[in-house]
Amino acid sequence: MISLRTYLILLSILVIERFFELDLARRNARNAFEHGAIEVGQAHYRVMVAMHTLFIASCALEAIFFPTHFSPAVAWIALGAELCAQLLRYWAVSTLGERWNTRIIVDPARTPVTGGPYRFMRHPNYLAVVIEIAAVPMIGGALVTAIVFSIANAFVLAVRIPAEERALGGAYQGLFGSRSRFIPRFRHQ
Image (spheres, rainbow, N blue to C red):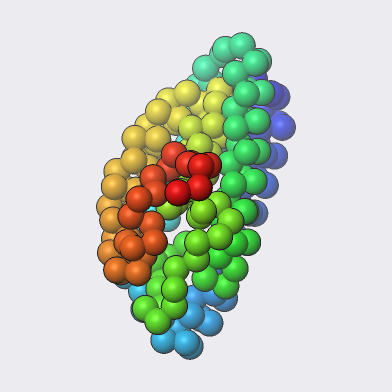
């Protein structure tokens, strides 16, 4: 494991990042609504936000009070996985540009984005979140948090992804129907 102090600094950076993302999402939402976009999935969004908030708190509390001690290699591998997740997340965010949001906001008149990581899979941002929820706790020895929140995230995504795909409509299904949700396909079809 890395030192507790270093881990808590890492968690603090993630909190700051989340506030940055929420601010970007608010600005993008305002712009989207001004151009006729609609929102769906508001009820499960609140659950998702609560889960992500509790996730960071649980990482810190478990690392402070109940850390699991294992080989330092596990923490370093988890840190590498988290860095890869961040790269994937920001590739997706930059590809979507003003369309990126933490909420499900779609403009039915716009064609879905098919560039960047979306060439290879339907949901690169959610793949980044899946990796992050498993990896970040392991950096600080929070094994129980990794397991519990990975399961909770699976339930949230089981509701959110179908809601998002329905909201994106027929054009999305036509463009992405043959692509995997999470497993990248690098061969051009």
